[in-house]
Length: 96
Image (cartoon, rainbow, N blue to C red; front, top):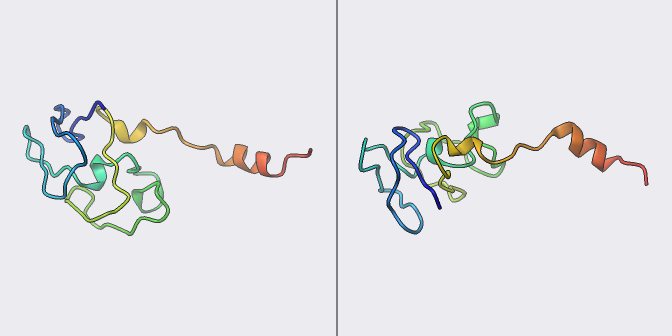
């Protein structure tokens, strides 16, 4: 997996899951933080696309979120495709 720090863009050389105390070797940013997660989305409710996640006040600080998944690549939190709500509704009420 291609992992980069969302703060400075430097590649993250850690293998396996990101721990709560892990930080970027380049800038010191905490890696188990909302801004480093693939679910982080500033335009979403609570700035998170994971509906079951608890609210986190400081998105740049390390947290205990159990849904955390490190974002792949620089700017990786926007890499996950967004669902179109209208398309979901149309599919739901589609005549057979």
